[in-house]
Length: 439
Image (cartoon, rainbow, N blue to C red; front, side, top):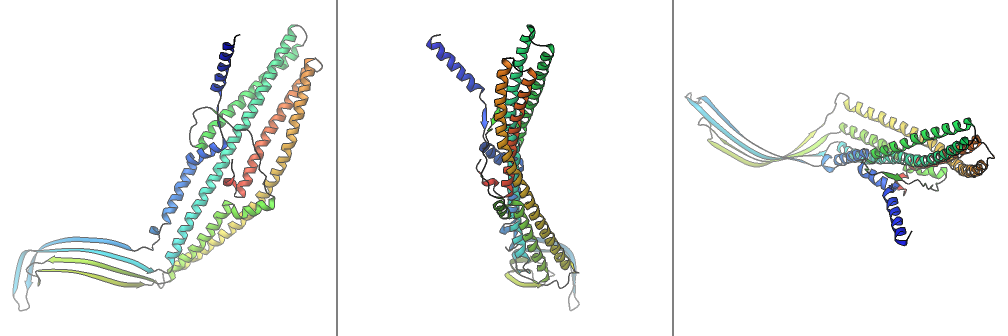
């Protein structure tokens, strides 16, 4: 083959490899796509926006109300008039026309501080909605990585099963060749055929799970990735803090605890807002208006008009409202008590879950190291078994046993690796650090 042909073949092979290469969806890309398109995150963002609007000064009751009013009236009637001197007169179709326009201002100076605490309550509702949105994002992160690592796990398992299937097919070909020359039994041939069939079934099932998981990932991403893609299969473990340090971070940053703190604060403000109904209300009002009327002949004035400014101060005090305010305050105190009970429960639950998760993570890391060594041992054993099998020193049953042991060791290692990473993510969420980690 001359040089030009060698170059042509080389370029063809490179183009073939490039054409078959799949897009690798990195963890960082998956996070960016999810934050932009995930349906749950979008809904949470809208909820935050509504709470933000509700906490605006325009919804606080602190601003005055200003209204413009105007009108016109027309009246026609038959009138009989009797004067003081006893004389009478009658008018048919007496017309009266009146016109008015005004600009009215109303403002509450004092409402028992209810408005003050209602406004603070709305502010805390906004803060609470932001924490709820953060919890939604954290949970979406966990859902994302559960499926992402599921794809990675199935990808590795599919590769291992494919390799196992190829080895089983080679073994079947070898036994068929030996059987043709009377060097193996029919039983060995049947066993090899069964092994190929089982390996094929396992490979097909795992491959289908791999494809299904990709579709599941598209749901979480909130968009459809049309082209086929792969995911990053390498996993790096973080150097996590001790349990005591994680607990300290959790008490300060856990999103569920922070939400409960807001719920308690909202309940306290609700009590104070309801207590405001015990006090009087003071308000001011003002109006600048114009009035004009055209009167019939029976009226003392034929026409009148007025323009002027009116201002007033009003005080109202609901001295007794039948006990409604007392009931609302009492119920608000009970709600606060319930919120404090929930907070205590959450603290104890968090400490328990964090302890269990931290210990499980440590155990998984130890198991992971043992399984890595186990894979090396089984690989070495399988390599030796292959050589002995080629020399006819062991049976096909021993060969199959070594093959299955290697596959099981590889599968256990892969599964444990991604399970450990997910537990690590759980610890990060519990300690409030999940959104601060670079992936």
